[in-house]
Every structure is written in structure tokens, then in C-alpha cells.
Image (cartoon, rainbow, N blue to C red; front, side, top):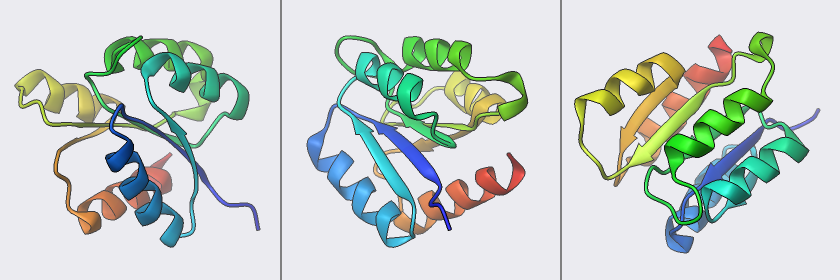
Length: 123
């Protein structure tokens, strides 16, 4: 059985490592990018089932990466995107609900896994 691929984009190596550990333990295949531009390129090549994006990243921020990734995805794919950021803003919660979810750092492992499972079931 093929594992579900999840793309993580965050400029923190520590957080990428932690998220990878959590998601691999839950039997997901994890792709990782250190900035938005790298995330777009990985998405172009690998077409993961779900994307987790930080907002503040070098090269290309999470908003621009999201826009580029959505332009590359097929509308019928209904790609879920989770914004995982330390920022607190009402517009992030609204955007997160429209595209998938908004989770605030630091995120609880169980909350992350529950959100990922829910979004993948509904996609």
C-alpha cells in the first residue's frame, strides 16, 4: 500500500525534524522544504496529498508558496493546506478554514495528527 505524501515547508530545521518524526510515526511519507520556493518545486515534482506551510520563510513566504502550489494543483484534487505559524491573526483562521486548517505554533502532536487525518479523509 502506498503511503500518503505530505509536504512540510518551514525554515526551522528543528521544527521540520519534529514534524517529520511525528508524521512518519503515523505512517505518512514526508517531503520537506526549508522555504517557499523549494516547497513549490517539490510540489511540482511530487504532488503530495497535503501541504503544511509556515507563513514567514525566506525566498518565498507561505502566502506566495500557497498561491503557486494551488496554481499547480488540479481543482479536482481539492488539495488541503495547513498553515502552521506562530502568527496570530483573524485572517489566518479564515484562510485556514477555506484551504484546510490554521494551527498555531507550538502545535500539539495529537492536534496535528487529528487535523491531518480529518483533512485527508475529506479531500
